[in-house]
Image (tube, rainbow, N blue to C red; front, side, top):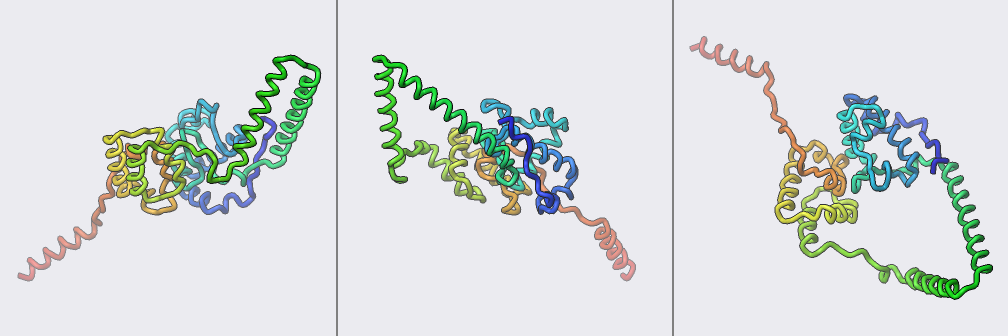
Length: 273
């Protein structure tokens, strides 16, 4: 995977409506730099847009701050912006660049595929040579097991879509609680991902009530919920424990001039009496 050493960046990247919007934000230039570094990190991982240190060790915001040499608060702002703008999604703490195919290094990927093809062919040739030169009861037994596995795989592959093995569904109690969450969530996309996030949480009745209350609070106070395009994916909101977010209510402020005008009007009325 290390052979993929560059990604595609369009010359019109700064004409992109999302990038233009970010430029107008506080710390906009720094956020764009973090975006470019995320793309490079995804190329280094080279796993269909996924970003992780290892499969067992996902990148946290603190790890990214150390990797990018940026303050943790700035990285948090950038990641929140990318999620809101649907530039990334975070599932099971793993970051994924959305629409990653736009940035893929096709030539580099082709080289990797070609090398994989050569290695696979060499392995098959060595295995065929082994099968010819080694004859023993153990080998024959292994051949029988291999043939059985082939037949098993053949039977599975021949199943129709309706007959293919399905992943076990949520338990009835979890399903009931998830359905209540799904009904309340305003952006109904990527339901399988949301179900996986819910199954990972395994919320009991009390936690489900807390999640639903937090969702209602977010729908009224979280600015991202005011426009559908900025609402996080359900799985992303669950994985980031969005129900625990705290918000400050927007209290409309009265213009100073309005107080002065009222005071002047009252004084004028008194003088006319």
